[in-house]
Length: 443
Ligand code: DLL
View 1: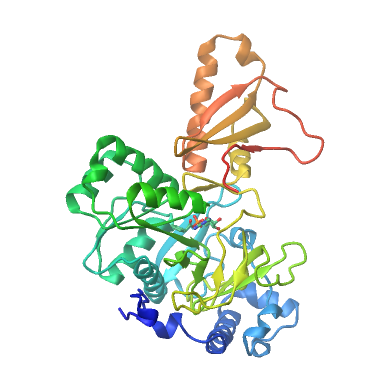
View 2 (view 1 turned 30 degrees about the vertical axis):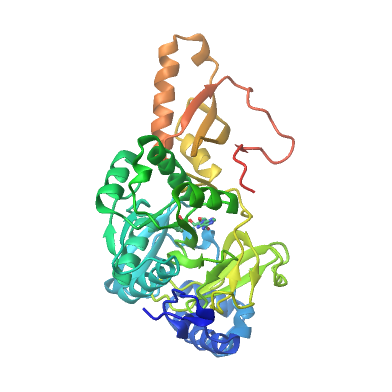
């Protein structure tokens, strides 16, 4: 790992040639990579070739970074419509991994990686870990979920790339997490911020907090605030860093913040960021909030044009005090759609609707109530069911509650508390139906 020592401060910069280049150098690199990517996509992805032909765009029309605005946008719906592998740009034999995240309805969004994609991803995550002060000699507990979600394996490969020792805990089982953290002397943890708060409480209650060697945390996958960061840092005596990413673009490691916490450094050598007004789709000024749109320029298996993340942020290009010149995006202030993130799991209200369609005893009226009890998110789903369930014996109501809970758990990936309510008891709206009450106060 290269280290920069400007201003006499020891800074953990993974590779200065990538993180400290001038704006012109970065634009040139992005232009070259964009040009190559567009040409490749035109020849290998029918979906994009057709889109380009529709607007009369030839691969040769993309010659530099400024030309990016000529490219069409991509949305989650495009991935759904081409489910599962329709946007892949390489043959199956080149794909070494797939992950998936929640779709807006029943179907997941599937993403794929070549061997080179996994290497680039691991390097991006290693850069984040280095920025958080994690070293080769450290042990890192990876407590994001392993599996189709990108959190667990993303951090795992990144930590191995750095050379640190990975403790692949996955999520949950707090007691065991504490035992491992204490017995192995873990220096770092990667998990969602809300889970670390929960773990902190358990560490305080058990007294183990006095014995652990934790120094750093790499937290993300859900919105959180600076106040939460300060609380975590104070209670655990560590440095906590914000890590951002999304499956469609790669997974964790698209951007993260350094020790100055003045925005998240965006790995612009792999991903081109744009912040656009979500209504007009015109660029926002520096510092102005809009929708983050990302074009990955080194992805082989799933290269996307101008992916609309629906995440709201702003961007700044001024170099950071840490020495990095990468553009910085601000902490996220919300989304333009109704996606909820509950205990790190992405949930669309429409998924509940799609799952309930299979239950004939219910009506299409439901309400999601999201709250935070202690440090953990809770989800309660109210569902209107036929009148007869309230007049018949109580047993039938209990059986139906159990059935709906199972169906929703399968559809959403987390178990909600289901409350069956009488017909017409959920408030009707005159305009757009109100499906969610989010009592958490994050924004
Ligand atoms: O959450 C990838 C990830 C894993 C990121 C581990 C960081 C750590 P998805 O499941 O596809 O991927 O969800 C992506 O989560 O569009 C944001 O809305 C939200 N999100 C991710 N990181 C942050 C963050 C992973 N640091 C969606 N702050 C994104 C706020 C975040 N929101």
